[in-house]
Image (cartoon, rainbow, N blue to C red; front, side, top):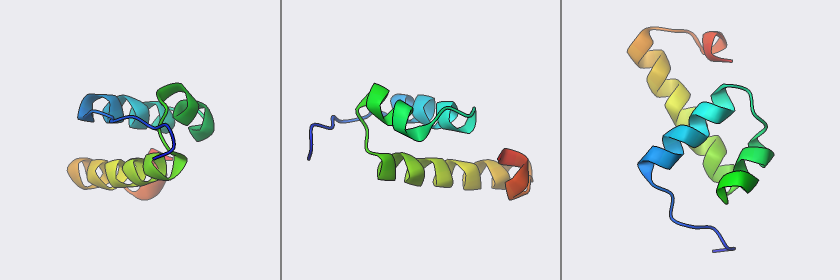
Amino acid sequence: MRGYKFISIKEKILIVSQVIAGEEIQLVANKHRASRPSIYSWTQRAKSALEKALGLKRQDLS
């Protein structure tokens, strides 16, 4: 582990929300001391769950 910390579900939701809102992943990663690959993964899973829950298409969340 390269200086990253445990990240709670609450903080993951905040991180993903910031990315979906348009913030750059690198800036969010630095701010929360999280890895970019983890953030990409969480964001992808969150978008898929939102699509399913809201009946949206992928482009609606971009």
